[in-house]
Image (cartoon, rainbow, N blue to C red; front, top):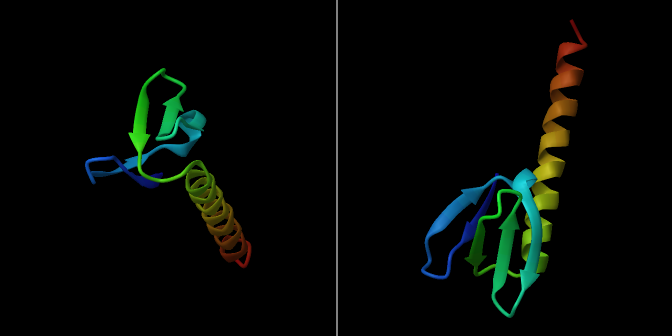
Length: 72
């Protein structure tokens, strides 16, 4: 999950795996696979960076867990 900010300053967590596309029109609109859309304060590039960091963390956690369990 990544944290984004709506235009009214409300923070929310979204499932980055459900993002279909992100566009700047000029506001940043995140469109989900369900068809739902939200407008956020973060730029398209910031959303991309958040998704990359989130996926890196998941991979890192998996590799750490795997190395810890393979020691037994």
